[in-house]
Image (cartoon, helix red, strand yellow):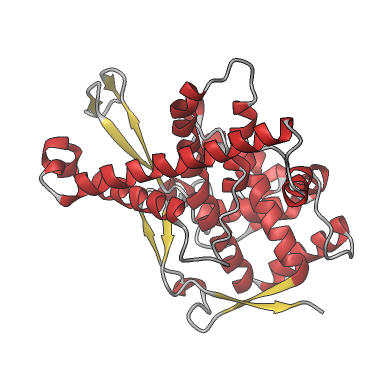
Length: 327
């Protein structure tokens, strides 16, 4: 979904898993970034160059830029053919059935030149980096929690059936998604317990005295644990319990605003937070309209869920579900 919105590209990963060079390069760069982030010795480019990581990072970055440029050239050629009325029937159907991507809109903006491609590629990689892995991980977590809490899944599917109706092929509108209030609560509880970005960093802009002998010099990098904040019993009683009712308006109003920040907060918060919520609602609504989510043998209790706290939360091999078509 993020790839389609950003580049108008459907990677068809399930149909063609062996030909995913764009996402392969992206995933490898993400792994290297995480490795460097959690190893202070590798903060130094000099030390990193003494390892194989530096050369590997450069290679995957160059390949990713090359793949991105190829996609932009394809968009440019399609725009040329559209102006010249040279599109075939399949290409015309694709244009009619899909909204324009971020890349297409930018390339059609007044004054855009081919020389601007490098800046656009940087923005594309940033958007995909922020949205692809995080949204995927959060969908997995939410489905796991629904599989392990069938009573909550019942309420979710009742809401989906009521709002979206009986047609299995119905595509939810923006208004429909906004009406899925209980799913919104379920996703927020999933984000609370297993935030897609469990740790963020911030740089201290100037020397700051916090009292009790704690002073942070300007330039210090601070790691902030969103995971720990979201499980603080002062704000969330019984924090290890999956309880979407925490997100009823009256209970939300009783808590400090910044005790829930899955998309960070302030001027450096995630610009894609609303997009992510809509994307997750869309995936969950379409899936749960047709299927019942069931626990797997490997993950039959919440305690079986295993994960690793990195830049994004990584679920382990036990984190599996089963799907059963609804009657």
